[in-house]
Length: 361
Image 1: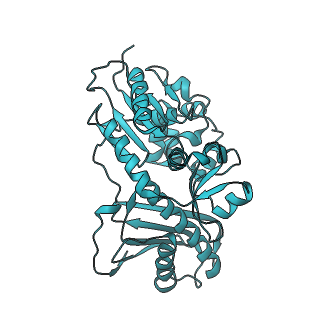
Image 2: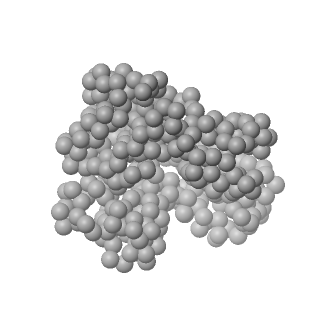
Image 3: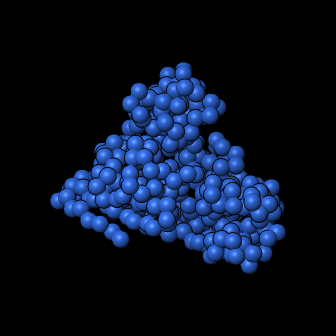
């Protein structure tokens, strides 16, 4: 079998919770929830597989997680330990190839067309990498192997935990055929709903629609959807790529005028953003607020802090200041609200600076 492209996606299994269970034997086999205190509007960073059986997932409020699993054991995140484990894992990956794109503390892509073991079979190589990681860390990883990066990521999630799934060349469309369209990267609730309206629920059905028709409905994004349905992607591993900004936004079913309701949404978005930053081991000093009014006019406001926010409440406080002081909230109905943190870097690489506030149009 000839692999013209060979990508491996490594995804650690329930990483934060797995580190806690590794280091604290009394937690093994129990529903462990890593996140904030359920009594203080905390948010779940991740949870063990025992907890996931109750429907708990990352970015869920800790209070809701407590309701779903009263016997769950809540553990505050220890990012120093998670960071140390992540550094070891990434160093292991780089012993096989320098072409490693780390996308979070527990996730990375590898391009193994050229590898230091000179193995031609990427599936065999993925198995060796999994064994190496477990031997060094006592943590399990799931791996996906494919000819496209997005396919490797989908495959790595197929047999979790401790799974290894390969999509051989020529089998891409067969693998995708019965998968729901939401499995494709970038297909969120709104795109999924729009595809459903067109009668498209699976990747196989998506493949049955012409690129021209998809472009008519989704613009350039439609062409990418068409390519993914064919199992095709031109993306390559970027070893030193770093995100500039991380943000979350929500388009409301009904426009919102009441400030208190907007603040509730803002708090929820702030928790999700901070949780994702912590998960990725990133920090930034600039808080960004995005607002789209009922008439579709869109504005963005931002404020730069001396130091990165230490918790989600600081993100919320700054975003709320911008909402109340720099927008028409309460006077003009809002259809979309977004919160982000920009100027991202690794947490230990952020330097203090004078507070600067600026507006972006």
